[in-house]
Amino acid sequence: MGTLDSHLVSLDAKTGSVIWDVAVEDYQKGFSITHAPLAVDGKIIIGITAGECALTGFVDAYDAATGKLLWRHRTIAQKGDPNRSTWPDDKAADTGGGPTWTTGTYEPETGTLFWTVGNPSPDYDGSVRAGANLYTCSVLALDPNTGKLKWYFQFSPHDTHDWDANETPMLVDLPLGGKVRKLLVQANRNAFYYVLDPETGQFLRGKAFAHQTWAEGLDDNGHPIVKPGSAPTPEGTYTCPDAQGATNFAAPSFDPKTVLFYVAVREACAVYSSKSREPEPGAGYTGTGQRLDEVVGAPGAVRALDPTSGDVCWNFQIQEGSSAAGVLATAGGLVFATVADGNLIALAAANGKCLWEYQTGERIRSSPISYAVDGKPSPQAPYYSVSRSRTAKYSVVFL
Image 1 (cartoon, one colour):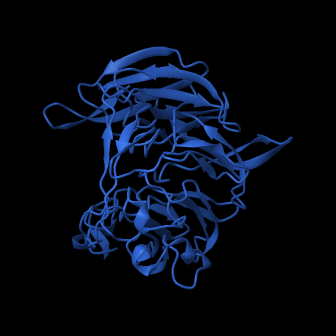
Image 2 (cartoon, rainbow, N blue to C red):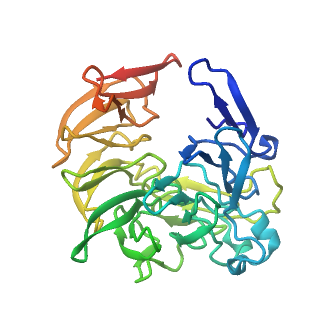
């Protein structure tokens, strides 16, 4: 497990005793770990949070038996890499962000590790970091044995709205262009849905899946056609979506029966402002911030998309506030999701009709999950969600 003070810890599963404990980085500098590690062929892969503290991110691999560091891949282009030129100078690059704060995705057939990278730093002040700022706001395809980069795709070049790309990348096998092929799909925080070739990183298709005002669309290479006047300014610029994005870390889900991609959506706008300041590693380095449009608010939805095109197939509107948790599609034809008011809801996977809801008493922070015992779904408690009660205790709801 990873810890908030930047340690990676191996425990004996039967006794809880510590087998090894590695300091991934110094938490006093501003580093932390916010996600679960990924086990791949005797290696434990973990990322680091380093987005708003004038630091830079990386992905590490450790030997599962000993805790020895096997490789480290840095998410900011290093000296000698031609993409270092996407930063104006070493100062900007060496404080350029690029956190890796969610768990990656592994494809065993090709032996490829996909890890997403967060925003450049400072978040809102792009004047001090001219260029595309690679490899921020990207998905990286890595060799899990060496950490070497196979390919990358950048969703939001020179991001100035904190629209990192740390949303879950999903691997599916679906018909496209007359044949079944492997696809990597992602609903991004910037409000666009992407379909990529997981072997090459080639952009195949993409379109907006939520309301946005910052781009005309995507060009043939998947690059956003940015509208003039959408970047933050000292006076403030009104842009949609807000900094929390059209979706965030909450996991999407895919149902092979309906062939639909389900995602928790947030529809909000904000006034973004910028201000330059000198970076101080370990201290806040955002370049100012945003102010939510309180009139529009932050209504949400659970949205079903065609996974090969991004077209919206159905939409379940949530007026009470968007979900902070992910969605779960199940073989029983249901999609489980949450509402900000604490309701756990079950939707029909085919059309989005709400079948029932259950009030937990507090906003649900974790995604609903299902599990199997000996390869079979548990008949007694197939679905559960973790929530925080009003008395500040934690509860598990079995349904």
